[in-house]
Length: 182
Length: 182
DNA sequence: ACCTGAACACCGTTCAAGT
DNA sequence: ACCTGAACACCGTTCAAGT
Image (cartoon, rainbow over all chains, first blue to last red; front, side, top):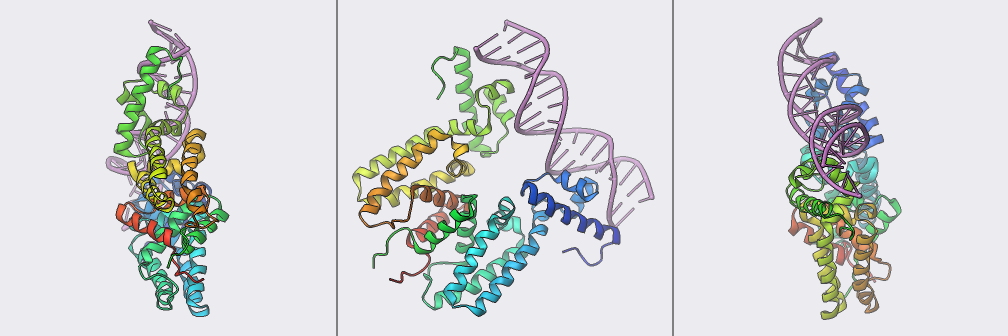
C-alpha cells in the first residue's frame, strides 16, 4: 500500500499505476510492457520507476489484494472444517489462485524476491495454520512443510494451462503416484 | 537435425547456429538474445531466422540431443530393473533434466508447441514404456497417465532452483501428501 | 539458393529539465 | 518533492541488396 505521508499527486499517481497494472497484467500477463502501464496510467515512465523500482514490486502491489483474500479464506476454512478437508480445499484454491493472470500468482509464490517478504510471510503463515492441525490429526505426512505445499501448488499451476488438468495433478499429488505399500 | 539436401554453406551455418545456441542458452537460459546467438555463430540475423523461424524451433534443436540421451536411459532402465524402481529412477532423471539450463527442459516438456511434435512423441513414448509395466505390476495407480508424469516433473523443476528440494518434492509426489487411508 | 546487415518497431531504464 | 518525456541501449524481426 502507499506510504502515509505522500503528496496528494504522488498518491494519486501511485493508485493509478496499480489500477493500470491490474488491467494490463490481466490482459497480457506478468511480462506485460511497463511503458504500456505508465501510458495507461497517464503518467511518465520515470514516475512508474520512482514508485516501483522493479517489475516485481509493481506485481506485488497488484498481487496484494488477491493474497489477502486467499489468506482470509484459509482463516475461515480452518475454523469450519475438519483439518484435512480444510487443507485440501485451500490447496485447491491455491492452485486456482496461482493460475490466474497467466501465472502471476505462481510467479509470486515461487520466488521470495518477487513477492516481497511481507506477502511471503503472510502466505506461509496461512499454509502453516492449515497444515499443522492436519498433521497433528495424522492426516498429512510429517515430512511435509508449508514451503513444500506452496512450491507444489505453484509448480502444478505452471505445469498446465487447463484448470481441470491442474486439479487432477493436485489430486495425484495428494494421494501419491505409487500405490501404498505398508 | 539439418535436412539432407542443404547447400554446404547452409549446412555449416545451421550447425554453427546450434552450437552457438547451446553455449548461449547454457549461459543465459532459454530467453537468451537471438541476435547474440547469430553474432556468436558468425552469421547474419536473417540466416538465423531462415533456419529457425521461431525461438522454440532453435531451442528444440538444442534440446534434441539431451532428449535422446534421456530416452535411451529409459530404454536401459526398463530392461534392467523392476518396473517401479525403473520408473522412479527415470523420474528423478527427468526432473534433473528439466532443471538444466535454467529450465530449458521444463519449458520443452510443458508445451507441445515448444518441443515440436517429434520431441513430444519421443518423450511421451519413453514415459509410457516405463509407466505401463509399473501399473501392470500394481505399483502405480491406474489413473496416472504419461502426460501427468511429464507435467508433474516439469512443474517440480519450475517450482524450485534447488536440486535437493526438487528431489524432496518428487518424493512427496510419489508417496502422496496425505497418509494412506484404505 | 542462400546470405548479409541495415532498418524498423518496441521495450526497459535513466536523467536533465521542469513545476 | 515530485513529475515529464526525450534519450539511450537493447532486442526481435524483416527485407532489399548482394553472391
